[in-house]
Length: 335
Image 1 (cartoon, rainbow, N blue to C red):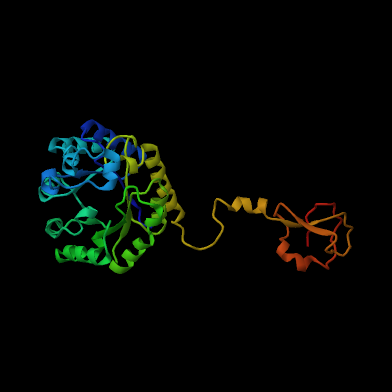
Image 2: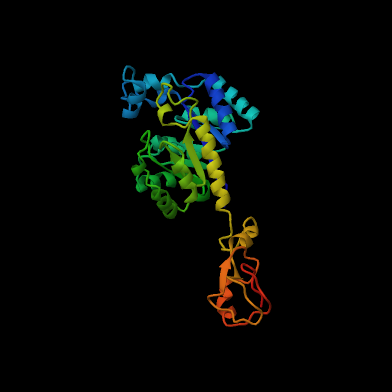
């Protein structure tokens, strides 16, 4: 099976601190993620100054500031991006970021970005989608809040630029933070794959690690999950994020599931269990002392471990035959 790409979404959980952002890089690498992803934006280019906060943002950051003020404080400078790339190289993990405006996209391209991530909120932003598509890079498309028709419109933008569907990975997503389990609808991920014939994945905002692991069992080729150094920190995304030990457990769980799905599908004893067959199975044995020549019957025979003798599946063949020698209780019968 295709190895799942695990994206550890640091997002804005650095709270504007480059030191904390570097620590997030280290934590993502230690957890076993493939990429650590940040968000690149100019708040003045993407949010009106009087835009309201979402309910989950108010719950985690209060209502004293506007959405613009909150997001502006979470911008990363160009110098910070360069330092994060250096930190990623030092820790052996890939750097990734989502651009939310054309200028940020151009900057990420200058840094050598080799794929594009379209966030859910930009799925219906045609001018930006066209800028994304013009790069002709492979694209990961998040679909929180979207309908199938909206996904179709976005996919067509990338196809029009010459990007084949094999290079468009569509992530099922729900943008409520945290997402109620009953609203996850993982089957929608499968429906997306069937309708658009693209690779599929899942961007998760639930609490815990079960749902992304379940998504991998259903065929997700990309998993994106928010994480933080401390879930109690103030900020819009911390409360719905994994802490480092949980991220580590999620990555390990995904890799274990991949191993479990890597078989050929044929039901045969595995090499690891073959030695246990003789121990766990049974053989036909004497249930009492038997004298040579005695007729072997239901009464003087039984089945007991180990399974190194005649299989009980030959019971009917043995019943009615005569003992070829004397047997003590528990001895395996021979024919």
